Image 1: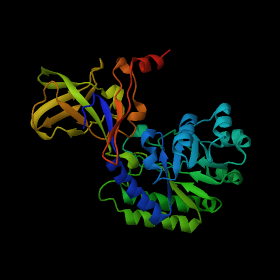
Image 2 (image 1 turned 60 degrees about the vertical axis):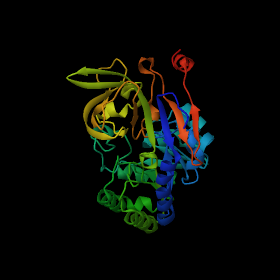
Image 3 (image 1 turned 180 degrees about the vertical axis):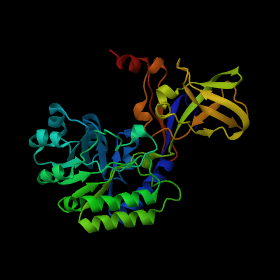
Image 4 (image 1 turned 180 degrees about the horizontal axis):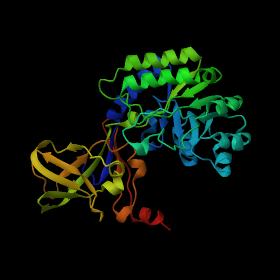
Length: 368
């Protein structure tokens, strides 16, 4: 491969397709329809591949919904924690389904989206999350409606409902129990609906995940209530398919070696700072040499993590940060005016395409 200037995000379509084929299997066996969660991943240069395996997109804002309509096609599910009047008028031009977060939003805006299937987000009071920050059922949660009686009162306005209550859930026991509880607690409502979304946050592309059991649970749920099930995969779609490729600019020593690369956690993999997690290294190989790998912004905590590698890092060494797609590329920013990573795709046909580079003018236009 021709040398590409770092930093850059490298998307591997072969690895991406591996996840997509698992989703296709679930789709065919269970009957559930998957729609890509754009809040997690909206890098549309690979949508031509993804649309073969997914039924459309789901969004969290007007702009995401429009992007799904223009660049992905197929079904467009438009959700927002709160739509403005202007948002609703615009989103009604291209959404197939509009999902409201509250009854007040539904009553306020349903007249402006006549002819479009309407949904309501429900907070079932149960959830699976490793982090309180990402827990949809946390105390005082504003995400979804919890009063079942009030939901039934407005059910005539709805064609479907959404339950989004998971985050990185790879536990089949947990999701099976949750689906059963939803059926028990909302059965009379579900029987009135045409469709139900069980949201995203389900890690069913993890190695060893019991896909047959998962598919059976979805199919039985769908048949019991005579309802179309939707899933909203985000990270499950793109996990382990993208690396952030960087170069070591300096190695300093302060009790231990610290390699400074030409990228940044704060600017290019922000979720690791938000959730205080450690980035995984795709290369170099692990070993016995201890080193800290850090970003080049002025933030003291701009650190990818502490590692043990096969050989010491030197100026000019390449470091590849793993799993750099989900909730990463959508959050990249211009903090410190650091060079924005290019977007590069290794295509299925073996070619490598530099899809997008970023220059000073992009930084300048991002401000005012």
